[in-house]
Image (cartoon, rainbow, N blue to C red; front, side):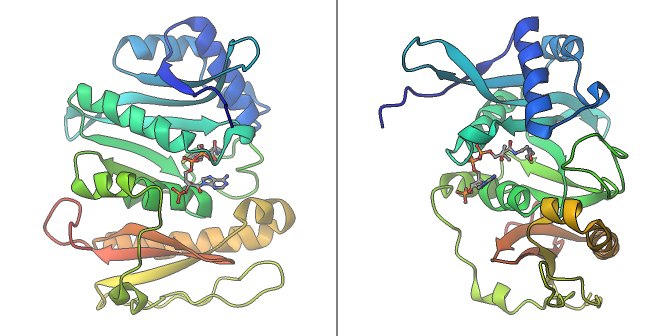
Length: 292
Ligand SMILES: CC(C)(COP(=O)(O)OP(=O)(O)OC[C@H]1O[C@@H](n2cnc3c(N)ncnc32)[C@H](O)[C@@H]1OP(=O)(O)O)[C@@H](O)C(=O)NCCC(=O)NCCS
């Protein structure tokens, strides 16, 4: 219906940086200001290569703009050179989700990074959050080969409560054709290849009352491709059954650390009703595994 278009643009003033901090509190529910990036840090980092973009929705009646989402990254050194944008936050207010804004903000971040000659954007996310897994791997085409244990410690966000803040380190190789294909396919699901259906699930789950439970994991380092299962509804599990959430955290930590040590990486994610499956593939010699 005739909604005015949402506009994405770089944020440049301290007032806008304060609005970002306010959005952080709203989106992540932080109660401790220590968890919010301070506006003075935002403002200095954008003067030296940080990328801070806001999504603005104009009011139908007054035309006045409201910030409904943002993305923030800072330049990072990797392999002894300025090589990456470290994306610390992407957030969209709950009432504006599912409209493609998250994807548009990442696309815009991608364009600004390319203008700087940067070909890699990295960020962390919780491997047990299935919506984020879907967004990062299926929609954006990021891949993962590093696992961080309890990287942020315990934060004041209810999204984090109760279990160690283990994270996947997502790598978004923005000049790879794979990423372009995923972004261009964003309007439809990417079809699952028959060979993937045959990849063994190495940790078949056990049926449970509200959530599936972690099953015994076997290593299958003979297989080039394996599937690792995770439950859906992890945020709710954290609140309602924290001991099960912790079991899932520890079980999947073991699996991913073992597979990453053997040279595998996570290249895709499939979502079903009560579970998601990560596709974990042994690294070949090319950079991001063109044939996966
Ligand atoms: C993650 C987030 C930024 C996505 O924003 P968004 O504007 O809803 O994203 P989009 O509309 O572009 O959707 C991206 C994809 O993820 C799916 N998706 C992501 N979050 C979703 C949600 N909460 N509900 C439904 N679908 C969601 C969409 O269906 C879409 O999939 P598709 O490409 O197959 O259609 C937003 O949900 C958010 O702010 N979450 C809380 C903060 C957070 O977790 N940030 C870290 C992101 S790694």
